[in-house]
Image 1 (cartoon, helix red, strand yellow):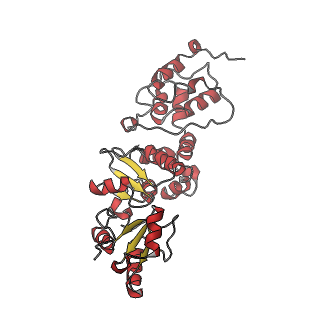
Image 2: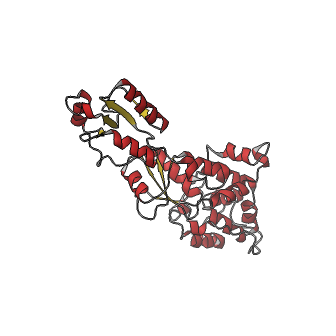
Image 3: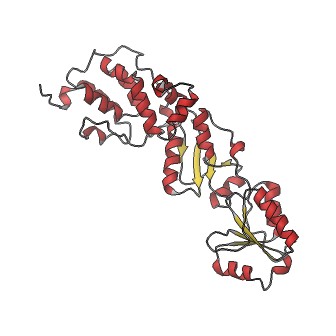
Length: 324
């Protein structure tokens, strides 16, 4: 028997189409051809307002099954839906209710959301194998963790930023590329960037990207103070002038506070040059740094104040001349 798929043949599909019109990326999906292979759904977009689950069996399904729609196509169709639409589908018919209750379908959704984190989730569930994990509970436990959180990032490569965005949004948070007053947390790969300095000024937590993975692994928002960037994190600092003893002291301070001490100055990797008072004139490193224009030149007080305040301070107030 050949099934002819027309909108009038499927009142159930019409109901779902109407529901999905509210989801911004589904308007074109419903015209996609179906195949026998599982379809990869796009990046999940979760609105925190929609993350509260609706039990699929709150009311009895309107019919026993979708008789005109082959079961394989029903499954593939529902795999294209967001979590909120997928849950509401359980009240359309009993066939769809059984799909919504299927543990394997929730396992597939989790694997598409967190391909690198599924095994970790299995271990957290203390189950001997993936088949014994309640994947809907795994998804539910992580869908609202970051509800109300607005996250931005700085210094993260664009490809990896997209991965972090997906992780944050899949846990109910919002991700912003632009930094503004609504941001509640900043993920940074290094200190000293404009976003970092604004966060410090506004007392917004600045954390390493490991904060995101810890939040997912433990199914609760991690404490930002445990992942706070050290004041010199990601910086490469050199010194010109001063005795050997003084340089060794500066090296220990830099390394202890998350930075890298470099004996040689480089236009590609060096970020700061500390100029000791007697080296402010005739220093080859100083002249090179000024010529390159890519290295911040500061006096030793910048280092001491940054460590004292546990934040990488702006370099403007610490010119090399007049250093202590």
